[in-house]
Length: 125
Length: 326
Image 1 (cartoon, rainbow over the protein chains, first blue to last red):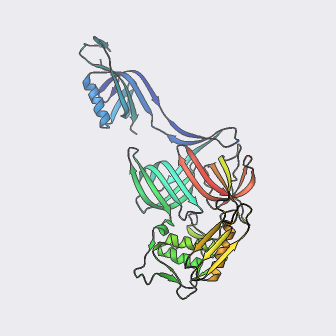
Image 2: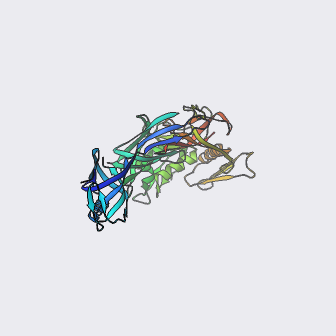
Image 3: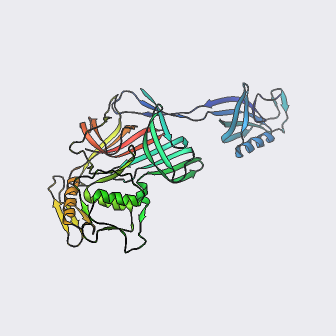
């Protein structure tokens, strides 16, 4: 069974996801005032961080390739397509020690590498 | 709590991340540096920079692109700009014939400045001659300029006569005025007042008084044996502090005397300075007079002359930095 989340065609079995939307609002303090003055400058792009499992070296190589080539891919979630995204920042991948795994109804033997990854992606507006 | 949306508008540019605008009494040409990720501007193009709040902006700078940088990894353009008088800085006077340089006879300071600015292609200059009127080039040899920039030439004329030159971008005209770099008789303060408190605008302030820039003795050396000296007592200095102006273009005793007197008036005074950071204000321009009230510094509705004004606009907010002289 395929994962619900995909970056392009790479299945990511997402365990956690969070998103950050930095707002650029400066706080100024007028002398002797009793409240701050705020200057709204704009907002930065939404950043999505995905933490989950990627199965097999081929998928990891694809993610690496997308990152270093600045490739735009469709990010698909359990809610459907989230639009076009690029990988930003570091791809962190820790290989999990296992003696066989059963993920989403599919069995993997000990020879299949499984990675726990943290991936940050930004939308391409 | 006060909430404002920053607004900035720059000719042919968008995704603006940083703007710095600087204008000063002592700086012939106002300057600006802009950082943005999109621009159609190239070297020599005209640029207008407007800042404001909530979609309402005021033009604060008009000039030309002098330098254009493309910067990675930030992927931004950095544009360096000067106002109209940047032309005077760039134009170097070098006559084809060294025996026949730029020369004028019996010419007033304003007309001399106009003719010099015309060398740099600047024609929109005030017609109001500052008082007192000085006359240059009364000898047969006249007043000559060569192998220097137009900026250096006109600033020499301005300093000698106690005047100032600047570009008024609002009215698109170069001004040549007897504006003194401090609050003078007859000055009227304009809004906004600089104050603290909930309706105030001062973010930080410092005050200093110094004798460093006091000159209570002025010595002028002109052509040949022409010379003039003016001095006056100063309660702030422990020994006479002298300014010397020496130039062969000072070719009459009247010019030497007038230059000594006007420079003594300007320079023989206590060097008081306020350094003030204000919440960004488009109504705060160099050479204006505003009223200052701040209890710790001890100023109560005190008029101050804005010697320099810098606007800093970024995601850290819009701050107007002012050097003010009472």
